[in-house]
Image 1 (tube, rainbow, N blue to C red):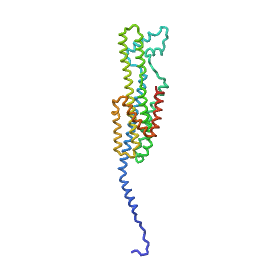
Image 2 (tube, one colour):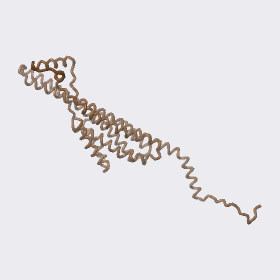
Image 3 (tube, rainbow, N blue to C red):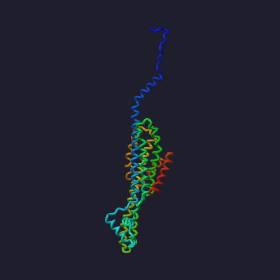
Image 4 (cartoon, rainbow, N blue to C red):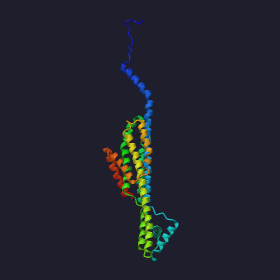
Length: 321
């Protein structure tokens, strides 16, 4: 039995605040797996959206590359037509005219347009670098899920980049919509044939009328191809720009959006192609105007959009044609 005067060790009872902290800390430990799963899934969905943006942008850039190739591509001829043209062009030369490799090439295809190696390299670099920007953007989200508790801060840093790339795709759509492509060799070939018919004194009026009518159909066919190319590029650029807009909306509200909200936006991105399918150029321009209005509504994004459009106009109109 302890003496009354014997020292007794003091055991301090935990206060109310300490009990509360223990309860909260235990609850947080149990909740961590649930929070991690939800936040990780949000990060995973955003990464998926960024990858889809990259893929759609790649399709748009590929379409743009095809349009550039088509503008200088030779007219399609059968072997017989090619031989007939060669023979006709050779026989029309003066007998004393010397023949060399360039002359032979001209006789085979007098409307040929050949880019220099420097021009080809510059064009490929322009498109390749453009494509790489979207690859780099998507890669920013590769490790997002593993650091999902810091995701909100990481996502916030991507908004400026997302706005720039979205404005870039919208800018390409606008440039192509406002500057219809021309299939140069095909146009020149048809116009040259029309000129020959006009000057041919051996043809009757009815024969000229019939041949000119046939050439009109050829001309309209060229115009139809140009319109199809234009619409295809604008459509793909708008799909990419709309994808970028969705990613930007996700990044803007990432910390406030629920997983269901993010899933809904991501799912909507998959149906973007169907939304532009079958639309004419006027409808596509209207859709692009809505994307540009979305960017202009934010003063920071507007400056980026204006800069991206200026850059694209300079590169595509001045440098790529």
